[in-house]
Image (cartoon, rainbow, N blue to C red; front, top):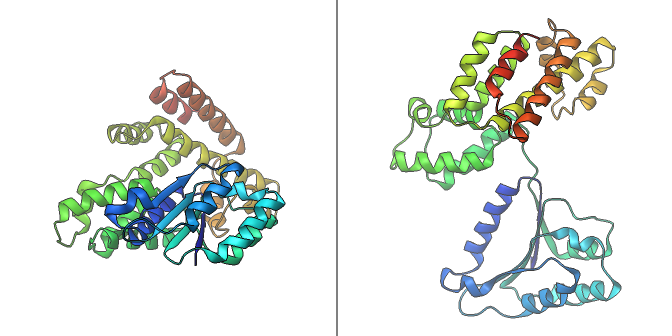
Length: 317
């Protein structure tokens, strides 16, 4: 199709997809002339149409890339007529590429016209709890680096990296250099890729259960692995907010589907495990801990670095 619409909050995966399209459609020698990003303004539409209707220079095809598809949400009748007239006439070697973090409004006349000619690809973020989705993502990414991993090594990456696609690319690039074509085992991957995700989970549980010594040790490992304090605190806040919603929902005898909605659970099956995790802790403690963690986050953002003592103090609330 002459038009491709790509949207989603997984901006990293979208950027990799765009790189792939550039490689597939243009030639390296002529890419500088045949890959064109156009300013995302209504006034730029005539330029966009002109560019995409013009044959490529030299060899290969041509891509005209609009980086914010939401500009099509509101357009004049003149622009809509221009799209209707020209989209079907785009030269077969050219591509009008539209990317957007948010899905363009399907009620817009311009978007409706685009969808008549566009191939749509969506890249929603994989949730941290979707282990199968993360494993499929890692398996696909591994192939692009010509890597071969044992099943246990792949499972370790699922836990260690989670849904962080930016980190995944960085770690696989490192593993590819180390592997030199050899199959990597679990111990190989463990030596090169730290498991900070599991450490953050363990830290949240240690704080919840009042285990200050364990929390201090885990925090030391995280900081030693260069994990940013703001990322650590954001993860902790997410855990305690979910736990608090779950606990108050259980105490309020809300139905499971209501609790899942309030806790923003993408996988309702997770609720069973959350209930187990908050059985022995009070809602009051969870609330105090959450408030304390939010305060630590605020301090970090204003330049106050009292991170480790504040986290340990939270264990004793």
